Picture 1 (tube, helix red, strand yellow):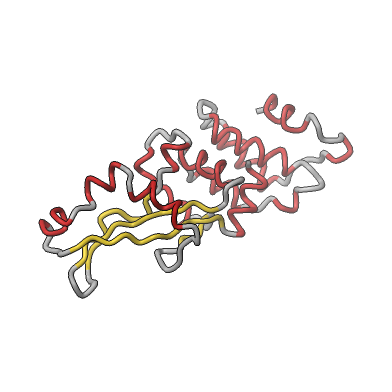
Picture 2: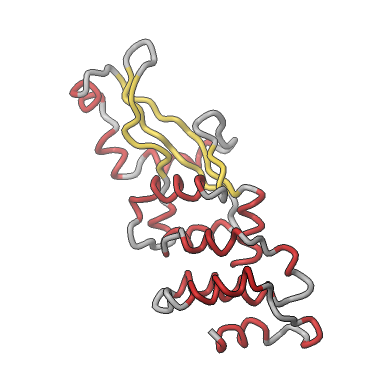
Length: 200
């Protein structure tokens, strides 16, 4: 941890460095010791600690950030790192519906971002998004709005997982008449942007 902090603070003027607040430093030091074999989470804790010691940015360090890192998986850390420079991710949900519009979600908030950034479990993306929404880091459009450029949704609709499930035959087998795609997105919340700026 000492080596990590030295690396993070090497370009910071000594007069700007001061002891971190105990309520941030103590739990962060404790938790970083549990994830020394995980680069993504270790780097987040190190960035948090380093920024909490920098007079210029320390006011942006929220106490809740320590607990948030504790509740993230390594794959979620990778997603947040990506979103720190690409704050919106398009999503597609697949529904089986009857002719009056009632139906069920077969796949909800699907994205291929897990494959693009090489997550360990790329198809768990819905679970990852749900957790980060729960933590207040992400906002979900929930299919109520979508991005203007519709071409960005085509790779998602044509993904092999979607093409396997998005058939009228499969819908009929579940007692429905048709399939429907709902276009949406997830994006960083204001809290999530603050988290990324400090921890990434």
